[in-house]
Image (tube, rainbow, N blue to C red; front, top):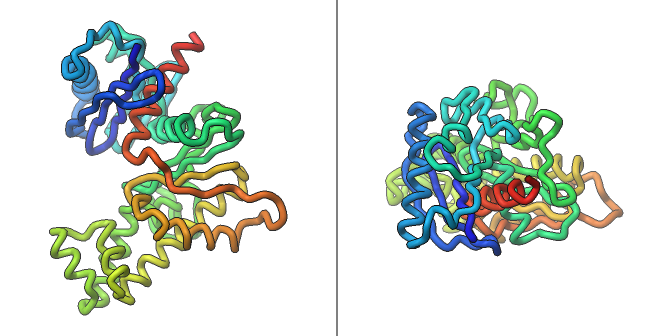
Length: 318
C-alpha cells in the first residue's frame, strides 16, 4: 500500500507517492498561485494525487492516506490552517475541503514539522532528540523528542526562525525585529549580498549575478570561492548568523542530532565546517557529549516524505 505526501509551499505544490519504506516512487509539482482562494489550492492538491496515481498506473484505492505539509499555524487535530501569511489563509478547513473531492483519510501538519519528521525517520531514527533546521525563503524547523513532533500546547511550538538574535535589528515578516530568520534565511542572504554589491562595484559578485540573471543565494558563495574578499565577508558573516541561531537551539534542547536543510545546505562542508566550529566555540555545554551537527540528506524530498509518514502515523494511531 502507498501514501501520498504533499508539500504545500508559497511557490510550488510538490507531491509524491511514498511506499511503506518512506521512499518516493513517483512525484510531480505545480505552481501554487498562493494568493488564490484556498478552495482552489485544495482542488489542485487533490488533482495532483489523482495525476500521480495515473502516472504510476495504480488505483486511487491503493492510497491509504494523504499527508499535507502546510506553512503557518496548524491545528493538526482539526485539519485546519488557522493562519498562514505565505498562503493568505485564515481558519482554512483544508482536510474537510480535501475530503469533499477525494474520500481518503487526510492529515494536515505544519510543513517544517513534516520535513523534520521525514528527515528523522529516514536518517536519524533512534535518536532520542532531533532538531531539523531549514534555511530557505525563511528559516523553519522542527523538533522531534522521543520520536514525536514537539508542537507546544497549542500546536505552534518550535518556530525556530522567530527567536531573536539581534534586539532592535532587521524587521522580520512576523512583525518583530532581529529574528534569526531576518538574518539567516536565503532571503536575508540575498539582501546582504545586494548591500555589499552596492558598496563594492568592483566585486566579482556583479559578474556572477549577471551570469545567473539575478542576485541569488549563490551569488556571494560563487564569488567567495573565486577569492573575492567582499563576497567572502558576506559569506563569513552569514555563517555567523546561522551559527548564532543554532547555538541558541542547542543550548535549549541539547539534541543528539541537528540537521541543516534547505537550499543553502547543498553547500555541504563549505557551510558545515565553519558553522560547526563557531557553535563548538560558543555553546554553553563545555564538558558533556556534544550535539552532532550535519547536513540534511533528503533535501527537497523531506517535506513530501514527512507528510506521508505523518499521515501513516496518524492512520496507525486511529
